[in-house]
Image 1 (cartoon, rainbow, N blue to C red):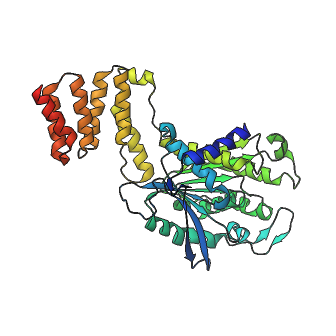
Image 2: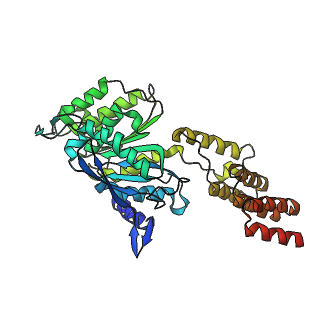
Image 3: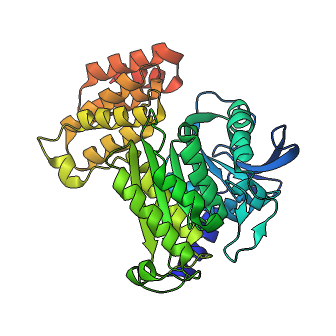
Length: 406
């Protein structure tokens, strides 16, 4: 199963490349900025779904996924996000920008305090986590927002020490991101002192619902109940993460948290990363997906348009701005209803598409074509006239001519 998954990721990267220039497949670009906070040049890798790297189009904006240890996780994460948002008409995820943050001094940036490693060795350069979060907040995020077509919705993902940084950011700057994913986070850091501070400090109240995903690997291949009762240094990493999991389960009903923890029975610290990213994104963006079963479409009591409106009202709350269903989504749903011979419902969706996109001649044209199939000639002519009035498109003009002759 594991081998099949990684083979799939490789295929996805190839299938979902953003652009092809001069015989080369391009999935992103290298960018950089100088950080006054950190006192150094920081390199980042950027993936934009449309290949728009200069913020030229303001009409299409994308949520942003900030990826710690960017060099290690960039390619597979793009494979996951691209496949689940585009390939084979997948709409599980929205298309999103991926920002891979490359490391310069990982221990310095990813540790919340001066401290020691699991074996007791003192980490001399540790404790720069506060500065790194300040870099994210005051330099990197504003830079990305200024130079790329971003939505306000942001996700932070980190693995191991990167997961520790995710937790540090959540506890100190919860408003900075909408969702947080910590994969096998190093909660053992400095004899679990940071973990204890989390458990004894009230999570700052956020004005929005925060989604948190915690992935825990079964690195030592022993039962979780046995781990909890073990006191050895060897199992401390897993015990610390299980403590964190219990903490989030306890507080999620009392706070603005949308939490999920998952224990990966068959994965270790190295293999868990990409699988957990897949699961995390499925969990975080479950608000994005809208599907109708055939049974629901046939149900005479099912108000399809009302459900679409309700869904996108919730999506708008997540994004913090009005979000409308895509034109092609409404059209494809109407066409499915046509295939099922549910003509009245199909027509209502074609008309709803016009109400959502009143300045798009295409939505009028597809309604006009539908009316022709239903032998509503006069009404079809009026619809095509409305289409032609928008942009003088030749399709509507020719349709009017043919309909008037016949």
